Each structure stands twice: as C-alpha cells, then as structure tokens.
Length: 509
Image 1 (cartoon, rainbow, N blue to C red):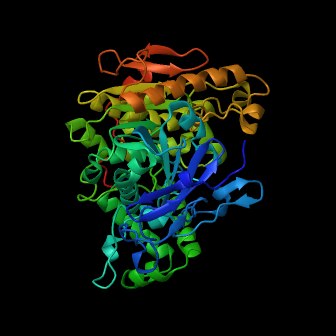
Image 2: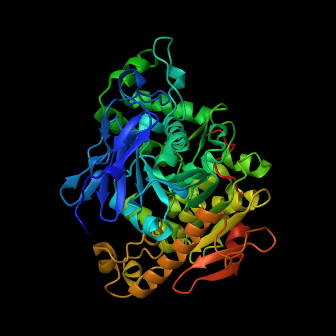
Image 3: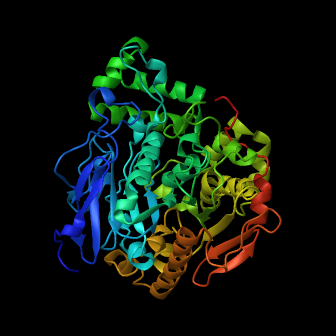
C-alpha cells in the first residue's frame, strides 16, 4: 500500500471549520473530527454541547482518544495502545478520493457492553466496504461506562445539573453532524444507514425508538443486538445510588464526588457495581440506555410493538452460538445453571422447566451457554423482528459460519464473529492465521455474500433479492454459512419455549 500523503483533496469544510485529512493508499481518511465539545470539567455528565468553531485547518489525520475504559481494551497491537480520555467525542470519515457526488453513507457504532471499545480498532477500519461499495464510511466514539451510561440526575443540584442517556445523546449528536456535513465528503445525507454490533447494535435498535433520532438515518442494521439492554428509571436510580456509595460518597456529596473524582476512581467504582449487579440479578447489566420518559420515552421493545419506532427498513440477526465468547473473555451473562436458576427464580419461575427443556443436555455447560446467549441476544431480536415487520421491511439472519479453528476453540460462530465477514479480514494476518487449519475459502465466500447484502441494503434499502422479508407467517431467515440458505422459522422449538417470558421487564427489581 502506498504511504500516507497529504494532498489538496484532503481538505474539507465542515460547519465548524476546515478539516485536513490524509490519503491512505487509494482512499482518503479524516480522523478524530470533533462532533461535540469535549465533555470535561463542568460538561462532565452533561448532554453533548456544540463544537466551538475553529480557524485554519484542523489536523484530522489521527484517531481521537478512545472513551475512558481499561487500558487493555484500547490495544492496537502488542505493546501499542490508543490513548483514552474524557475528550472522546470524535468521529472518522473514510471515502474514495473526490468529494463530489452523493454516495450512500454507512455509520458504524462499535460494541463493547457500553463499557469498552473504540473506533480506532483496526477491525472497524471500513476500507473493504468503501472500496467495494463506493460508500462514505463513518465510525464514531461515544462515552462509555459510568461517564456515559449511568443516570445521576437524582443527584443534580441547581449549581451542578446532570443529564441522562449521555452515550445515546452522543450517538444522536454524531448522526446530526453527519446530516450537517457528510455532503461535503461526497455522502448523501438522505441515504444514511446506521449499523452496529452488540452494544452498538443495541444502540441501533434504541435509536430507532429515540424521538431525537427521527430522520437522521434511512435504514438500520443490527448485528447481535441485546434489545432488552435498557433499564427502567427506578432501577437506574438504585444503581446510581449504589455507585455513589461504592465511590465513597454520600447523597449530599455525590455531585461534588461525581464532578471531581479522577477517572480511575470512577472506573473502579463502575467495575464493582457491574460485579454486584451480576451477582444479585444475573442477566442484568447496569450500563445501558435508561427509559427516562424524556429522551427515551418508553422501552424499545414496547415502541416496536406499538409501531412508534422509526419505520425504516431493518436488517437484524444474531450468530449461531452467541454465548460461547462470554465465559472465556467477558463473564457477564447467565451462562451457567446457578445463574440461570437464580434468574428464573427472580423473574418467572414457571418458565424455567419449559425453557431449559428446549436445550438438549441442559444443565450441561454447552447447553447453559447457548441458553444464556439466546436469552440476551437471539430471543429479544426475534421479538423485535416480529414487531417491526408489521410496520416496515424487516430482514432476519443467522450467522452460522465458523472455520475449523473456531470450533477447536469451542467458540463456533460466536458473538461478534460476523464482523470478520462484514469488514473482510480474510486476507489479513488474523484472517490467514484463523483459517490456517481450514476454512479460508469458506470465509472468503461468506464475506462476499454478507458484504453484497449489506452494501445493496445501504444503497437501495433492501438486501439482494435472494433474501425474503421476515414476517410472522413464514419467518424467513437467511442463514449465512459456507453455503448460504433461507430457512423458515429456524429453531422453532426454542422460539416457542421462550414465548411469554419477559425476564426482568416490569419486575421492579
């Protein structure tokens, strides 16, 4: 690949000032563009504010700081880490040279349980999508953990107010920036597809029910969403109160502690809160959007059910074995019989026998892991597809492909693995190593299939014709594998076993 060079076609005027990007091989990249003011000092735990315009050219040649998180999650390569700080509200644009024309825009929201992740991760580069589809690709950072996804509004004072749903508000602010500016980069603001994976996919399904996001995107792709990863205002208030205690503060000193505590102390309190919630209520996660009755008026699943979600075309799906990743790398789900039993006891004891019977071999470890993954990702995604299909074109998928090495590792087509196809890692060092024992041809084939569908959807509003719409009569689902096929109502027995289970929804725990 040619070395990076600066040329006149890297200069673009935004509403806040000129940004100067760089040529990266045959593409042009603008990185670290601020879409909101740095949320620091008095703006910590406040809604994103407008950027202060600048004069001259803003250097947009390097990725901005990642959101505050543990350093190990900001690794770029062995021994090299992306800096992280509260000054993280930036985005990146990647396009082919020349800013004329109106190309489809794809905006990616990274995952990471709302506690980790960053747009600088090499996997999210977007180069293959841009080259193949001639799209304008945008990736964003947003606030994470306690700085982005706890609701401290109960501790507001006249002198020091706090806002709710900060990470969600950041995402809306980034999409507003796209509407204002993307035409200058050759993108069509009327043809924006927002897509994301895991927490990023939850962000997508939540944005579809956020009034402030209406009109900011024309279609959506949700890869392994956990649509239920939102919480009630009452539950969020209890978690915020617990967090303040873990931070070493009292209600009357909370505002000062939240304002002045170093980020390390905030992070440690967040880690303790996460462990406490998982222990007490397996299946719940304290970091996520809050149904505050204002910015997020109602539970997203309810909004999809009553048709008040934004009626844009949607691709939604999950992977064959979502749960296998978590016991190995991020032990945050009910993936063992003890947690599963306690979860059902707290929510719907009568459902336990019915649901566990749908997982042959339960309580064997593999069956428990699959149950926990289905609970979190597959079951609510099916519920959401059922609801949305009554109001807008909806397309359901399952990603089953896994090369031999993934099977040897006990992961199979686990959570996040479809990203390797979406972003095309087959010819990278990781891709070649992963398929060394076998599966290289299969990975290239499934990558080709996924990308063709994703890009056609971003361009035309539908995937390719081989993928039928989802409805509750047929439940047609595209199953991505070495040979991709359409299956009607796959895993029907599991789906029926989960029917009527509402989990912690409405339990008031």
